Length: 189
Length: 397
Ligand code: SF4
Ligand code: SF4
Image (tube, rainbow over all chains, first blue to last red; front, side):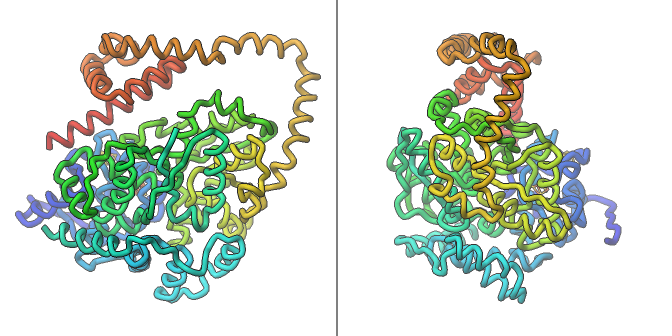
């Protein structure tokens, strides 16, 4: 990891973007006084390039591209430990969520596998109204070219009646299509 | 009690046992579950990772369908539960979001109903009530109750148990006759989907939980989350291989154990479908219990009667109910005075008094814990204050 620093105030553009992200996340990054309690309790900080505290620091310094490109935001498991414990009431988990969505909007995703999985998952929901574990796993493994990963689990799951070979479908599938379309439309406003 | 029931996709798939046993528990405890008609997937992690509005609209359609019938919603899957709570919260706190969500789902929805988890549900029906239904005590079982993340966090949404040291599942499992251990990882994250997307990270998280269970001397794990079950049960073999260590720890859904303790055969609720063989541990319990009883009888014949006497007052549920009613009255009449028994700081006292004045549920909850456990009541009081302060901070921004 390269060391990143910044001296001087934020630009107008940076400020506007940060305000937008804060609003979406429903939290205020300037409340953070960098105590590190979030990172100490984060169960995956051992694998992160920037710890949760550092991600917030990047944003405070206006180093938004760094934050959006961090692998950390895709490693975060949304366990909410950080938000629960922050003595300043910063909702870090929600911020991580917002950063993932912003990275996605800009096509700047550090972990393509997770994004692909999410896409496959939501496509199934859009089409059938239900998710479909077996189908998604298969699709995911094909599209990330990990043909045999977890194959050792697929068959035993089927045998136990824990994965059906076909997806469930709901009746209100046209409602689903509408919800997806309208969410997209309302999000643009 | 009648509840709308949201099984969620997992209970039709990898967590069939959870669905079967939840339905059995409802039968046993006399609750009518009405499955939400034509329910849809909550969107799960993929939803909130991708689009905020979509991640709220997908749960909202289900919640609105239940609201139409005036029903609270039981959501056994911890991940669905978390998404439902987040949606309720957003709709209650943000009128602009509410309007957009209603437009997207094309239904009115004002979150007048509540989603509850399996733990809250069984607790609400009464631990004593549950005890009275136990026919096959689980005495001899040593269990680590694993709450994971989403049942207790964020506490501003869930609010029914302590986010750092929750007790509800322990109380339920103890009521079934089993012993539960204190351990450090009860609310640690299992890694959720990381076990699939980043196995090198997810595997280590699972390993550490299993390791801590062993160290704490537990012989099995109890969970209320399909994702935790998948990681701890289905992937236990993978983890054993990778870390060259045998665990062989059976994992149960809390509802499976309730059903079995109330007389069901383990196969009825699908325990034979687990990856780590879990039926024989249950079958071995009666012999263990017998050995324990013989030990106890030998060791202290006199102590037994003493303890029975000592337990009387705290076991009497009528007394507790009276106490709760009295505290509740006090909280209604003079909240500041009553809560100042828990909190010293004058400003905090006022905040808490405000919260319970305006929220009957929180008032009742506080009275209930105050009647039974002051230490815990202080924690609950503090959590309510922190929640309210966060809320005020947000609305002033
Ligand atoms: S716990 Fe809160 S205040 Fe402390 S570093 Fe993390 S975000 Fe900042
Ligand atoms: S929500 Fe994400 S960043 Fe926060 S503690 Fe959990 S994994 Fe770490």
